[in-house]
Structure formats: structure tokens, C-alpha cells
Length: 494
Image 1 (cartoon, rainbow, N blue to C red):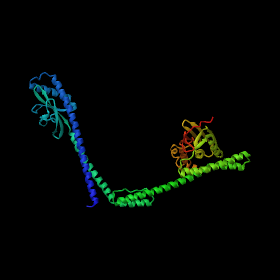
Image 2 (image 1 turned 45 degrees about the vertical axis):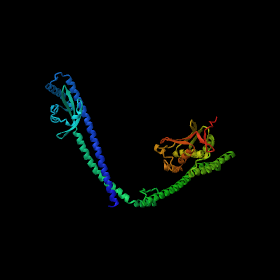
Image 3 (image 1 turned 90 degrees about the vertical axis):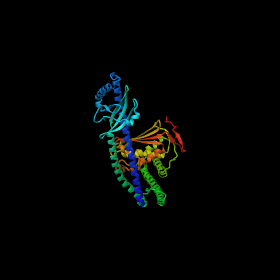
Image 4 (image 1 turned 60 degrees about the vertical axis):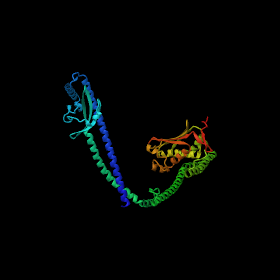
């Protein structure tokens, strides 16, 4: 007999034996529990009749010293109790010391005489016992106790029908046989498959190598045992994991380089537009020397910011740098430079732009945070449909926990399900509209990273048709120039 059939037959025998033994124990335990419960109920019924008889006998004074008188009175009392408990279907009988019945409540169900021999040793005065009886095809649990009246012994026996309990036991055995057949069929199929799987481990290795060749580098094979095949599977898994790590590292590096390139291209648009706008004013209009110097200075400042921003974005995205030097920045001066950058764009798009900020000095990386603010303002601009009179408001105010930068627009708004997705790279709510306005779905993704770098929180509230409000909540704890932590100590300007 080969290994396949040895495994197959031994497992089938073990499963079948376990199911049979376990089910038989369970059925027998359930049956015995039901018998115990029925016996307890029989004892309770016996107690009820016993105390009822004693109560009625205590009221009777005619049964003193005369057995014949006792029989008549007991018969009358038993008949009276039988009529009172008929609705409860309590079957009982009163028997003489020799086992012959003095009275039975139901002649067909209650035996005319009883044999107390099996429990006689336990039946002392005012004690009780029980035994199982078979009457025709019915099963009863009989609870018997002695009654001593004067010098005469009588037996009170109650009968509890437990036929249904035995029938339930037979039904359970029938169900067990049916389930055993189903389980056996299932086991035949399952164990056959398992055995076949254990015999052909080489096929799994072959399939895994094909998947790796097709580009699935995460495939692993299960290791079984310490034999040659198990060692081969272990070496194969180590090779696959190392290959997967190398591929993931290359993929992540490529993704970060692509993200940097796209983010940098995205960040160029707003300041370049501003620079072109100021340069066009210098070229096309006759300006005073002071205005010429002012506009030229703005172009130089935007150029320097682009130069610094490109390096910092590369550090943040490509190199994953987190320890940027933070310095103390006046929020009023900070927002003045943001306003100088975005106002030409707002004017060209017929959008009114309001700025209202409370001044405070915070530790931050100004070039990166300026990227956040310009991105939020530019996104607000893009959300305003062409031809509509737009309005964008930037408010900055001190809060108990830090500083809140709020950007509000009267644009088209967003659906609630879109809000949780807009910080994902390359995700756009309205792709056609965003592409037409120069968007690439990158702004809020990089904004989220910069805000997290500043221990801040980005919150967005928007309704379709009612515009959008974006809050940047900066924590009162900010990094200082040395990379440590500083609490906000500078207060609002007087």
C-alpha cells in the first residue's frame, strides 16, 4: 500500500472514530440530563400529593386503629385529590404494604400493583425513591414514598410520562447517523485533496517560479518538513522575499522621484505666473523708479523662493528629510509675501482677494509653509467657475492651542465623500476642470506632508455649490532653529 492510501485510510478512520465517540457521548449526556430533570419533576409532583394527603388525613378522625376505616377514608381522599388535580395530568396510585393498589388515578396508565423490591431498602418512613417503568410502549419514571398511618404502611406512587425523552434520544441517534454519512462523504473528498496536495509539493514550486517570472514577486510557498523539498522551499522563499524587497525599494525610489518632479512642476505654476505678471507690468507700462524697483524685487524674491523650494521639496519627497531648520517668522510679514505672489493671479481671474491676519511669531520653515498657503489659495481659485465673480478670503488668528490659517472661497465645493480622498497624490475631484486650470492633483498631497512636519492639522469643510473652507491648525509647539521643541512665546503684536 503506497503512502497516499495509508494517509487517506488512517485519517478517515480517525475522523470517523472521533465523530462516533463524541456524538455518542453527547447524546447520552443529553439523555441522562433529561431523565434527571424529569425525575426531579416527578419528585415535586409526589411531594404535592403527599402533603395534600397528609393534610386531609390530619383533618379526619375516623381512621383510628381500624384498617378498614383507613381504606375507606384514604379512597375518598384520593378520589377527591384526583378530581382536583385532573387538569394537571398527575398520575398516581395508593398501594397497600403487599403492593396491591387501593386506588389508581388512571387504570390504563397506572399499574394495579407495584413491586418495591428494587428500592425497598431506601423506602423508610417518609422517605422516597424512584424507578423506571415500561407500561405497554410508554415509559414512566415512578416516584414512590411510604406513608405510615397509625401502625399501617401505605405507598404513594406518582408516574411521570417520559416517553418523549426516549423518542428524542432515538431521533438524535437517527440524526447522528445521517450527519455521520454527510461528514464521511465530505471527509473522503477533503482528505483526498489534502493527500494529493502533500504528494505533489514540487508542482507548487514550479507554479511559484512561473508567477515570479510573470512579475508577481510576493509569492511564497508553504514549507513542509525538514527534508530536501522543505529546504528547497525555504531557500526559494528567501530568494523571493529578497527579490521582492529589492523591487519594492526600486519602485519606491522611482515613485518618490516622479512625485518630486510632478510636485515641483506643480509648484512652479503660481510663482511663475506672478513673476510673468510683474515682468509684463514693467515691460508694458511706464512706471516710476520706485515701482520698477518694487516689482523687480518681487520677481527676484519669487525666483529665490523657487530655487529654495526646489531643494527643500527634493529633501522632503525624495530624501524623506524631516529635520529642516525652523526659524521664528512674523506671520504678518509671511502673509504679505504670500499676498504679493497671488494678487496678480487673482486680478487676472477677476477674483477679489482679502487678507486679515493676526500677527504672531511662530517657528516654521517659511518656504515650505508658503508652499502650503499658495497651494490652498490656488486650489480655491481653480474651484471658482470661469466667468463667475470669485472671492477668496485668507484669515489668520490666534487660538488657545496655536494658530489657525483659514482659506475660504465661494467656488463649486465638493461632495462629502471626496473630502477624504483629496489629500491623495494625483487625486482630483473634477479631473477635466482641474487639468484645464493647470492642476495635477498633487498640491494637497504635499501640503499634508508639510503640515505634518509642522505638527499641524489639515481640516476641510465643503458643500457642493457653497464653496470650501480649509483650516490649517498649527500647534503651539514648534521646532526651533536647532531642531528642538519650543513653545510659542511671542505674543500678538501690540
